[in-house]
Length: 267
Image (cartoon, rainbow, N blue to C red; front, side, top):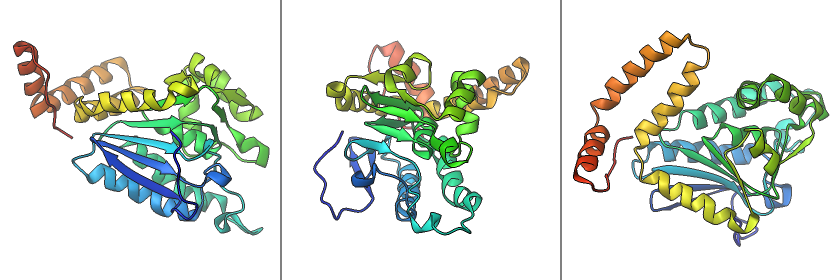
């Protein structure tokens, strides 16, 4: 999904087309590693997309040959012997991960190259991860004496199980995109030549689906993980009751009976 971007362009770019908001991390010379300046634009871009009723899907991707190499350790926010890494995580990555996991529309991470450290876990926070075959995922934290952040400790065992989560987190080994798909870490790995079209097709499909129901599906599945079975069933009933009073349910049923394409609008 790379494109020709001026060298003086801001570190986050936002484009809107046909209901898809594309947010591009734009520090290609540094593999789009996170800086305070990037965070200052990225979270507001997500907030704006969440608030815009015209947005039906968000795509996050990277400029150049990488998705995101994680925190830029040369950034002033991380400089100096007295840096408080916990405060950096609380100030930047906690709100970022929380916002992505609570978006009112589906979010696709279009991983066009390496996704390392917080960059990898930021991608995994998204609802779908579509990766180019040349991409890779690296839990790089142990290499600098840290633990996974940006939701990594919660996401990894839920996606691939405790054994693989520990292996990935402790070794920091590079995981090719094809293997990431095989073990269930990501949604799909596609050939580089088909990558942009695959992301665009999925995004377009999601814009035509009931956004509110999709967001509630994410919420229900995440909430059910620690629940007893009966509690999960009760939560399903409550959520179905709420969704059943919305426009999209009535529209979906009417369209099904009339054998036409539904037009969903709830968020």
